[in-house]
Image (cartoon, rainbow, N blue to C red; front, top):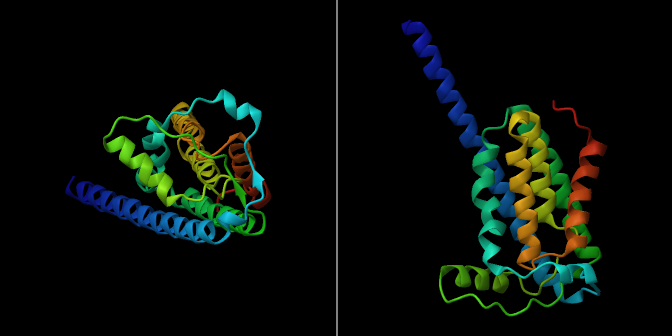
Length: 212
């Protein structure tokens, strides 16, 4: 009994070490990618010749309060990713790095912008402040397509489906909410979402679905 208890304790400690290690690795990659994104934004953003807005985007209501959903992956993803199996984790990391490199290269070579954001009507408070700070950091409104926000959450959904197929409604639902938030906050348009998801799927197909 003591031996079994000790073995369970060792296994639990190893699991939590893995969760912490994987979460830290993802956090480093995420914020490094964000840094590269912002550098390119300030460098190439004003050179954008293409606006990704289409008349279809007029059908989507402007809901800046969704900024919390938009920013959610920055806080939740490192935690969720920690619970993936090592094989699925490295599957995600390898494809995520490829997606980041390709996306940043596109932003440099073919800079795009979203349409000018409308003025928000949020009441003064934390949500209004958060939205205003996000917009301030993300000026000019460039690096539109493909949406890195969408492509990386798409890869995360695929990884979660591999390890937790029973919870697919939760995984897919949460990712779709994040995608909706990119539209509601006017951070992205439909073209950006479509190209971001397509890039993630294309990279996964080319690199293969098999987890090492």
